[in-house]
Image 1 (cartoon, rainbow, N blue to C red):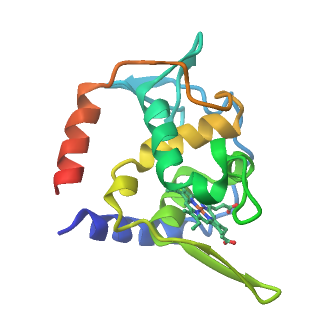
Image 2: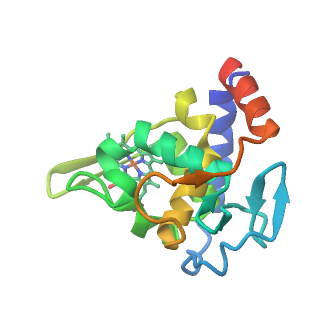
Length: 173
Ligand code: HEC
């Protein structure tokens, strides 16, 4: 079974869940890390989050920054600030929870308004994106709650062994 298929199946389940009422806006308080596992941080609800202390970002925030600027910024603008073509994720991500994020990025989205098509591509088959979905979520979450400033994070934590292992199995699978 390809990881792409697994992501699509996961997205289908998550889309079903996404019909529940929109969650309240994300904040720095809600996004606070309460648990760390192998260098990855989680909030009180168990969703992935960032940890930024004295200007040092966790590995996943840094990795998400890099992945975002490889595959998303052409449409969504540098640092998630948006463009005339695609929405500012620094705003959108305040109201997009983890499950919704995974499904939008895996499945894509298309909207037509006033005869103009607005297309978010599906990345469910793109390893450079789906192997790093958590990294992207964590980075964009940090941007949206204004915990991460614009630009390349100057200081980062070392890459955790778990990140190297996951990367090898996802990229190789
Ligand atoms: C080819 C241009 C393009 C690229 C590349 C792109 N997006 Fe999008 N994205 C869009 C457009 C356009 C929309 C708005 C779609 C709509 O109107 O429903 C969108 C919507 C989204 C949304 C929902 C925003 C909202 O306000 O509801 C998220 C989340 C998102 N994109 C994340 C990403 C991520 C993460 C990447 C990189 C892996 C990415 N996008 C790459 C064009 C793009």
